Image 1 (tube, one colour):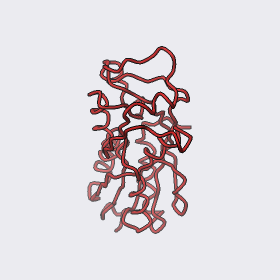
Image 2 (cartoon, rainbow, N blue to C red):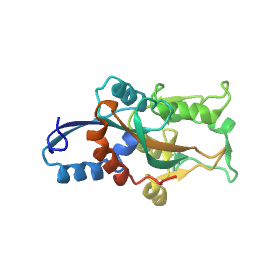
Image 3 (cartoon, helix red, strand yellow):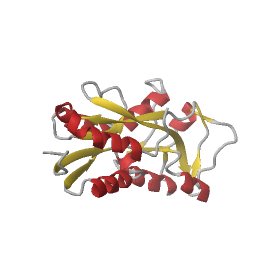
Image 4 (tube, one colour):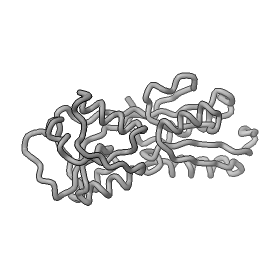
Length: 212
């Protein structure tokens, strides 16, 4: 593929957090500036995308920075604050909710192999302390819908669901400790770094996540 000549295929892997926030901005930019480029977008969970990068099945991946990115050229896409959220029907105490209390609530998360799932386990800390009940769903938007329907509580990006919080469809659970910050990055395949560099740079420009 000759990207400089504005032709060829670019295979871009994307976690759903980015797919539902600013991927369209990047896609429009590529379409406008590289009209002969064919883009193939793969939306999947973090571990799958990193595996695909290792197998050279993707040219670029927009992923959470988990420490598994060694071997790839990487640029920061910024940081996102995640918070525990619930539907409007859940009565919340005035005091912050601790790990023990939250463990008694049903939790909705990505599947067991996902980065979000491992983050939740890390947040709970002790291996003995885990949510009593976990419903899995590999689509973040669907997780938010299920949370708003009072099916369970979930760890969601605060900025992405600001309008739902303001409308009262979701409510923020103040927790001790607070929810984690997640860093995101763009990975470039080592095989075509010079050719892919402009696309990685456009991803950095398109990102709406806060720099750190």
